[in-house]
View 1 (spheres, helix red, strand yellow):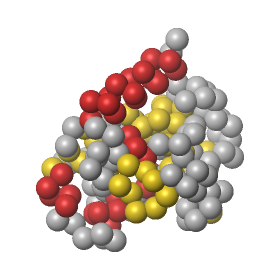
View 2: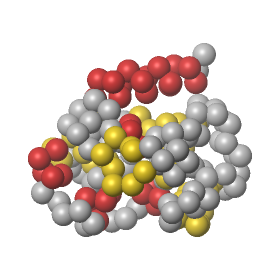
View 3: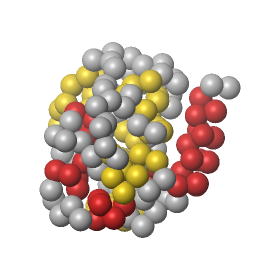
View 4: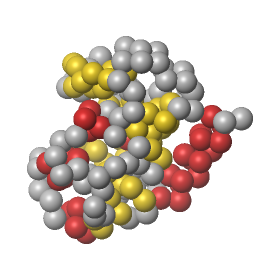
Length: 153
């Protein structure tokens, strides 16, 4: 669930399609999204059975360890785009502002936090041309906790 007002519009990121643009400012450390309506988690093996291009495959996100959440429909949260220099961070289904975000700015996260370490996404980061690959769970938790602690220092 997205807390502040927002709009889904054409992304400012080349070839990204639509993006989420905040309709109100969010202060550094503020919660932007919280998990809701998750009735089942899926294992990595179950995710692998979804066909690429299907709603289930495209909307799955690593939630914790080797478990994924899958949106039953294409929710608005699915329009958050990737950046290696994001303005927000995804952590266990919550999205926190990494810095003050002004109204009208596009919301971005680093997709390496939502993909398993065995997953290389099928597109490149448009700003750098680098591939986007998930990181191991323990590394994910370590990196994201460090970033979260920095938010509240």
